[in-house]
Amino acid sequence: MHGLERGRATPESRGLRHRIAALDRAAVQRVARVNSPALDRVMPALSQLANHGKLWIGLAACLQATGNQRAGRAARRGLASLAVASATANIIGKGLASRERPDADVPAARRLPHAPWTSSFPSGHAASAAAFATGAAMEMPELAAGAFALALAVGASRVVTGVHYPSDVLAGFAIGTAAAASTLLWWPRRPAS
Image 1 (cartoon, rainbow, N blue to C red):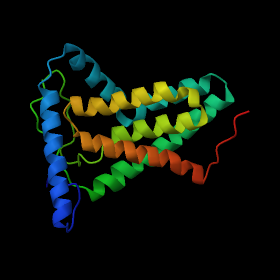
Image 2: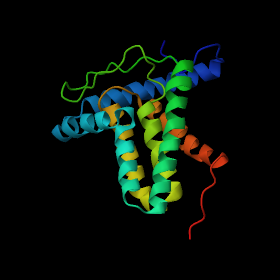
Image 3: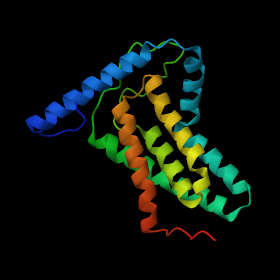
C-alpha cells in the first residue's frame, strides 16, 4: 500500500496523497542519481550512528559529563523528548501508516539495509533527531544551531541512503518537535539565571 494512512479517504485527500507521493518519488530518484563520494561515505555512517538513538545518547552523555547544571538538564530533556518521539513514531505512527520503503536505484555504497516489514512513514530517525535537538535547545538555547544542523543532516541521510521519502522525514521532524514541546506539560523549564 503506497498510501500514508489506512481507511477511507476523500477524493481530495487521495489526490493530495498522490501528489505528495509523486513529489517524494521524484525527489528520491533525483537524490539517487547524484554522484558524490562524500555522500557515499558520510551519509550511511551518520544514519547508522543515529540508529537506536546512539548519537543522541552519546551527546547527552557528553553534556552531562560537563558538570554544568543547564547542560545536564538539556541532556535529560533531550533524552526524555527522544523517548516520547521514538514511541510515537515507531509504535503509533508506523502502526497507523502502511507505506512501502523507496525502491530507488541508490548507489550500492550509499544504500542502507532496512526492515522491509516496517512502514516507511514516519521516519523514526528524524523524530528522534528533532526531539533531542529541540529538547536540548529548550534548556540551553546556545545548543540550537549545532543540534538542529545535526538533526537535519540525520534526516537528510535517511533520504540519501534510500530508506525514507522526504515526507517521511518531515513527518518525523514534526513528531519530534511536538514530543519535545509536550515535555513542558509535565516538566517545566527552569528559568535562565
